[in-house]
Length: 86
Image (cartoon, rainbow, N blue to C red; front, side, top):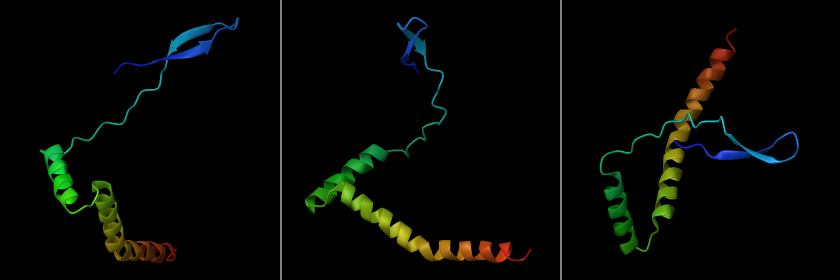
C-alpha cells in the first residue's frame, strides 16, 4: 500500500513532505463467491419491478433490525437482571 506524503511546515515555514505514519490496519473482508454476479442479477430483477437496489437493501436492513429487536431486548433484560444480583 502506498502512503501519501503529508505536507508539513519545517522550522523556517517551508513545506516539507513527510510520510504519514498511520496505516490502515483494518483488513478487507472477502466477499462471498460470485457476490458481484449475484448483486448484478438482483439489481436486474429489481429494476424490472421499478425498485432500486439501494431502496430494497435499506428495506432488508430495516426488516432484519425489526426482527432482531425482541431477541436484543431479552438479552439486555438478562444482562440487567444479572447486574442486579450483586
